[in-house]
Image 1 (spheres, rainbow, N blue to C red):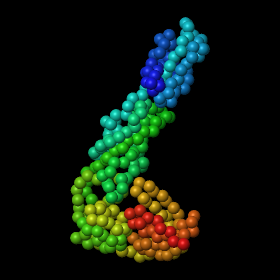
Image 2: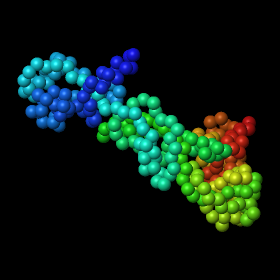
Image 3: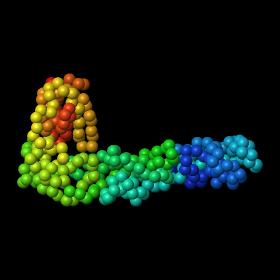
Image 4: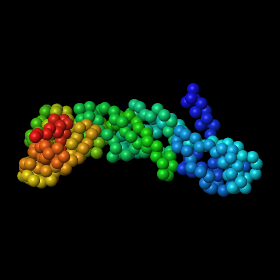
Length: 297
């Protein structure tokens, strides 16, 4: 009952769309203020979902300020609100990821203010590697005025057509890839920002950084056999990946290793040693799929 009463009250208010309530907004609620320049500011607009009520006393003060005759009466203002429809979500996603197929499973169940909807590619979470078709919850925002944003979210399943080099059998970490190990598969894939190999010549003769199961796409970071990349005593930046979670820590090498190899590193906070796979000069990665971050004494 309370929510119904509030909905009726908001509906009775004059709609505003900017950060300020202007004389033009007053004029739409009370035609006597039509004589006032429409851009003249009279106060801050309310937050979405709430109201700004000018009392009779305030209205009399405003009438006197602008030279408007007549008795003052209470006026109410509120942001125009509506349900976030799925078509708007699809359009906003495709604006960021052109050519994508988008299925909206769920979105916010409360009213949102009018304004353009935006998603950032940088905040798009990745589904688990073992379930690449799983829907993800993507947070975005509505810009309902020049300086104000309203946070929203949508649970979406996104795919984009393409091709990827895929393992046809289980591959061990550090294994050299030969022609019979991989094939190119066309299909629809989650549009992450990773660089996946698209041609077999990108990977044949190279070694993978971590174990891969049959059917898994191969990352273009597979590397050729090389010399020492991390030397004992080097400072190494480690990316710790567990599903959509990502953590970056600084560490110091306790051993030496080449690209794709395992290096022992010391965690400066705990003082303990752990292993990570070398991905470049002064860089390594620990993935949950490879067993996660196991520290030694």
